Image 1 (cartoon, one colour):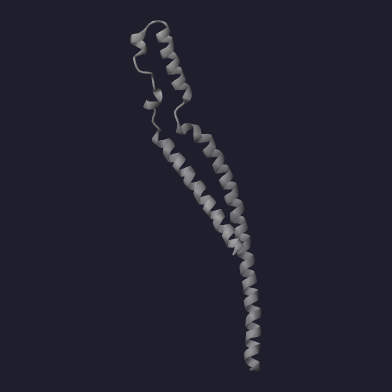
Image 2: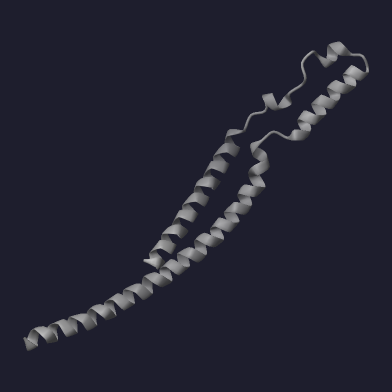
Length: 125
């Protein structure tokens, strides 16, 4: 019985040393992941906000077309003004390059937030 209790005492000490080193190493790694993903998310969000106006037509184009139509009506040029209001937004389309860039930006932001979430879960575990 004495040999068994000594074995388990040594095992407990070695296991605690190993677990302590393991937790210290991975806790510092998760801290680094949290800092990096936080900074990356902030910068990525700034780029997404800057590119947001490219996702919709320019409202001033619609205003200018409607004002031109009103001026034509004011001058009595009903034929040039047309019977239907101008809608330049209906002819607007999102360029494929802009769509791809926005998609990549949103996916990278999602992955960064997922990495931060995983690191927080790992630290709490």
